[in-house]
Image (cartoon, rainbow, N blue to C red; front, top):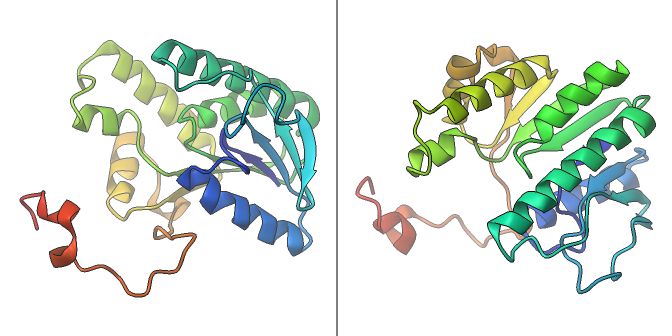
Length: 219
């Protein structure tokens, strides 16, 4: 199994905290796991190795080791270098894997998986998990216009990449009709996995107790 995500242990983001234990459990169960991630979580230049074994998992860190939080420019460089490196690695070193499993961190991982599969003609099953929706989320936030040419091209590439996957996993039920209608994906191809937490809560928090929920007029 090849897992593709820019953040992984020792990164402390929520995505890393969710998937690092999942990959560890799969490795403990005897699965051969390789992670293609970035250098997020580094405490300084050279603090993270490009190749290492963590909890029986082969970790390959891709891209350039830079502080991507400094500016949008540096974030763009980090994304681009990571995606190009992942593309090369998938084509030359991962074509014989059974499964390529990617998530939307960054959101263009599915494009790279699609391009790499066409180049190397792998027989690996492609599974992609949507932790969020792009460009739909940016449209909802007013960051981009749904009528813009950038969004049109973005959605067209998404459609090609999504349709080429063997399975799409979503975290929210409301994602299913959006994916089905916008990208012509059969509902049978979509799996719904409710969001989970790395820490078990004592009990579910009611909307009436949530200050965040109270800030929305719907609750």
